[in-house]
Image 1: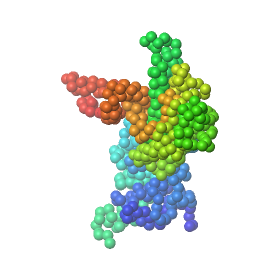
Image 2 (image 1 turned 30 degrees about the vertical axis):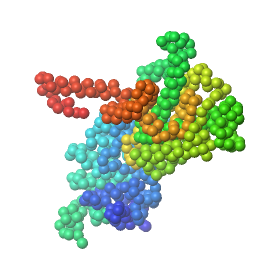
Image 3 (image 1 turned 60 degrees about the vertical axis):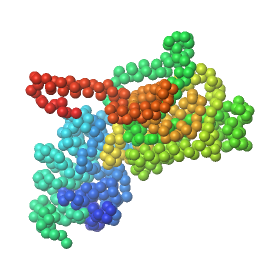
Image 4 (image 1 turned 90 degrees about the vertical axis):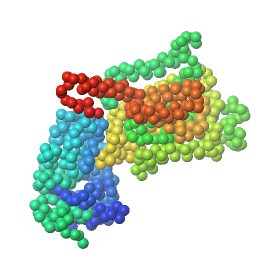
Length: 250
Length: 382
């Protein structure tokens, strides 16, 4: 290989009970890039994130992060390499306060002993408030996360990844279920993070994808169909075909 | 539950601890028998047993209430602790047994030529007390390691713990285990040279149980206030998020499981000299299920609730199993169902539940009254 990619997947396949969720997938991501993955339902978008983060393991193929193979590591080990993931449905700790949610994500040792005997330093508290300012939740700091609106939960989850200082952020449908205003704010948030972090966004909402203005990869039946700018892929015959089903596939 | 410790809580806790540790034994020792304030020898022994069961309940709360691990085999660890101290107590009988032999009676009866080698260390009280902690801890470590490493969760974990205690129960029934078979251990005479038949010794054991309960409570309270406690609750509420936040959830669960097993072992060791017997029936799955009911009735994830639940339900049991023995199991089951359906936070959560019910009623009333043009449908919030 000539080039060092931040994330690289080659020849990756994964089937569930005979259904090929991911089929000979090749994917390359540069450091600092913001990339959007789109594709019809069942194209394998979330499964791809599952494979990166160790939730499932590929049948064949390699996935490497900064040259480290990920396919044998456990979820928390992959996370500790600097890969953070936001789930499709907001998964925050509803019974914890907003502050505690960010604290849980904060970078630092995650062993049993250090959580028992460790103290939260002032610098860490300042860092938590900084993250809360970034995601616009500082006024809710001591409220339980369960009381937040849907969109705010999504931001809180992104905040947890920021607190960890994850280099690669995997963001699964951040705008799902959001109002237009919330969607626009989420777009701004992600754009402000691009460059500092490398980000993969999975999204359905084309207005949102346009706002991000990033390189777009289209997945179809577990395979990369094409990539390019949003305008390029939208005018691609094959993309129109899979989205609108104009021609029958053979 | 607010995680911070308030001053009010400290004061109330200190008073409750003083009553448990000092006042009740004093009422037994110094108040004359005719007085209404006198606590009888029978009662102090009974309450000492309740406090031991309360310790088990706290250990279950640490597991179930805070970490979401419903173990249906907690009485196994309790029994292991009880057996460990029971071995020491058996050896302390010495020649006072039925057969006037240095061997425990059941060994004479079964024709053992000499004491099995693994019994020897239990002559030492210190070794036995350490065994009370490490034997349940080791069993919990091995079982927990296998279960959590294989990602066994939820109801599957519960079933496995139940199977574990049942298997142990069947194993302990066998004489080959050299632990007294189905009769277990009984007829204890002395502990640290104190005569167990003396009221003062039983009072001492009561105080030891009360002190242990307070210490265990404080340990668990402290643990749940640390970041570790936050991780515990996070595992309970969203284990996936925890895994993908870089925490090795299995290690945390294993730690809690082992600590909770050791606490239950300690409770068993304190229980056995007070009740005077330990046998495999203590490991029957029904015993562990009963302990779950105490925690649910008292209130999960409150630490205080399980103590109230364990003492309350057992006091009720002592009374009910005499007054109408045939109906007690139905009563117990009914209580569990009612609590699960209508009191999710148990007895401890009842005041808050009633308060919110009252507020909702008041709001509904206001909405019904004519001068209410503002914010209709506000009461629809639940």
